[in-house]
Image 1 (cartoon, helix red, strand yellow):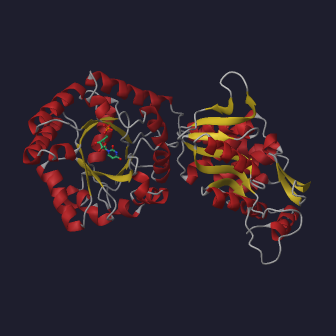
Image 2 (cartoon, rainbow, N blue to C red; image 1 turned 90 degrees about the horizontal axis):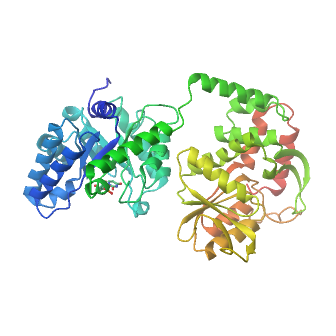
Image 3 (cartoon, helix red, strand yellow; image 1 turned 30 degrees about the vertical axis):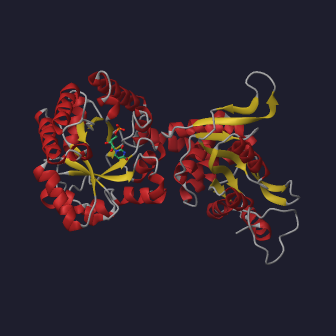
Length: 527
Ligand SMILES: O=c1ccn([C@@H]2O[C@H](COP(=O)(O)O)[C@@H](O)[C@H]2O)c(=O)[nH]1
């Protein structure tokens, strides 16, 4: 299928010409349709040099009945008269034959250039808006909405599904006539993790990210989350309605937002050039080859682990944090391997170590406000992980506790970001019996925090208890699973014992370590 140039190409041209990714939202809260029309036309005149497109929301016009519809038509004419594009926010979604009628209303009558659509009914509801006579039009599909109750209906899995179905190679993408840039996605700026996940799932998609301003999101955070790490091509539209419309000087407000978006784009780390990528790969390969653990390099190409896990293993072997041999555990068990995160104490290793946490957290799709690290090992962890998340475009604050309460100054045991009423992700190195995590969650509960998940470096996947093997026939529940059940939140590990074994088996060579780990798992393993 050949690509039909259309809305997205025109949008890209507008963004380039105006050096702007700001879309001015037109949500007139007026008493009459005529006022709605006039307010919007004045706003268009005031912002036309800063907006890459306009987004009237049909609701505010439909509210005035037939006169409102006429006002909307007039506003769209005005948008075209200033040489801009109209993205009509109408969130349509109905069975095919009805969707066809909606498409006719939006495009033939109102003359919109693009629309927002709900994916709930599947492709039948989308096709009429983007194929046949409307092949050059654009559609943004609701993927993750910005409103507080979104999670009642939307799950991370559903958001991922919408993003991948809409992608160039996805089922909906390949069926649309605009093959090169099939469907954009609506991903709320209030959900930077979802923005970043959508970008990962659908690298080519234009993202429309409502929620900046009145809904509390900020422009630079969403830009960081929406930029692709592999391309300079910015496919992002940041729509802002109330924060511009209600400003004392809408033109100045639009200009300021436009500049903030530009700054965030130019301050983003540049995507690696091919030369950088090759140099980096070669440096990592040579680091790994010279590491103390033989043939680690094979891991990087062996495919036994995901890329962030492979980097993690390379880093913890190099730093000595992961060792093979015979180690006496607190439980009395003799373990063939031992993990001590405290030995990651070099800046280069730490950067990779924290980034592996950030990757695992990002892949998990968990949404949170604060990263919390329980004292002592959790203290550098929460700061490092929060910084690594920021480098990946995911914003968070961090906090930790001190073991001894302070009896002066502000007092108390919690340090850093406020946790009360906020979504907290707990980070730790390893869960052995789960005592430390339980203690930390007790502290958080007392402080009024909302625990949303736990992320650890290694899940040893072994049953809790002493050196005696578990009784035959008894339920083999791991410490991590126990914590999961007890706290009712996901526990995300960077690496599990299963992954470690897969790595040892994939790397070949002497399989003494693999045999010992396998034997240990047979005795104490929970799976
Ligand atoms: O997830 C979504 C989808 C659409 N919207 C719409 O965007 C604007 C936002 O207005 P602000 O005044 O900038 O908050 C509004 O028309 C919404 O209906 C959204 O907010 N979230």
